[in-house]
Length: 90
Length: 152
Image (cartoon, rainbow over all chains, first blue to last red; front, side, top):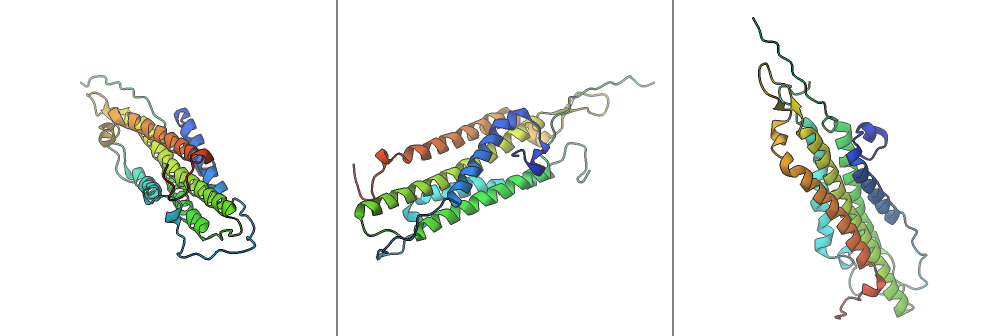
């Protein structure tokens, strides 16, 4: 799908741009995950309530990755579809 | 006496292979994990309390990172879905020779029903991925950022 390792089996030119976009987005996510955090501040603030990830982004936005990524998790099932006239496993 | 039967059908790039599809699923799983873990880590990070302006800036930076992660994961999912759709479209429209005599038959009859709109839908999903990414970038502009509770 992205042109690396076992993913390089597909040589369709029409998929070059989507692959490049997927690679860019994967790098974007990785960079946010490994971004250097600032050092510990000199004083910590007292919080009246626990902070949650829902305070940073709306709940609807947090659902969006689940809505689009869960169907991709099931994508290996597409490999079970066989051409007409060929029995499964052939 | 049998009639001479000749049939020629173009071979396509092939149905997406299991390793490719499994790799897409692994990438999706990684994106889902990052989309859940990174905002949680951002929310847990200590907040500076010395200076209200510094605290406000820290809140803004957290929101930028969280939006980037969520928007990036969404765009990644849309890109994977669009790419899979395009990969299936190319092969779903393939024809194979039928037992003689007869016309060419679709190699994947079930998927062939989808081809009129599958390519268009896949391209639309890829465009949606770009729009999602652009929307996240736009909302990161500090001039457009408002503190929670700020109205105008």
